Length: 218
Image (cartoon, rainbow, N blue to C red; front, top):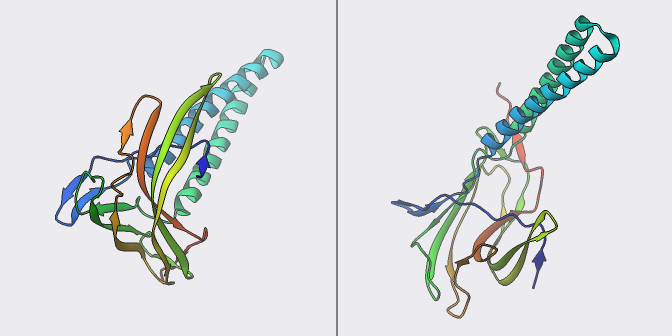
């Protein structure tokens, strides 16, 4: 059985009943996360340069030099952070998180279900080469514990069933597949306690990092 240290528990929005089935998507929003990191970076930079200005004033007793140094340093750091954030945002491969549609919800032990996964690329983006798509159904035991003040989360995979092994052709604009899944009747049901949980996941992987070619507008 595989074990993964420093595992992060996935967070999903509540399933939404749609004409296509029950839709589930991740709760985390990468756009909000990037903006939050940028704001925090600016706040800590302001604190740091304020401290630097106070230190310069302490040794030089020149308030004007301290102000200019503090202001120029913060502006340069702000511009660097803004450019870095924009480049990181523009490098993202996908416009939104992937979404999974299931024929029924909640899933039950011994049941058979139809699933549909899709995740479109950014507008104007396409795959620049063939990529290998893999999807697996996993049941894991996830344990959280503390080593001193450090929190550690470990995942032990107790069941794994392959779902999809296929090639996605170049020029594709959306990662998508449909298949059926079966939940073994003798498996562990989902369980959530304070430090432990039994977690069922469908995990989708692509074998390439540089997937996307952005078509330039002419």
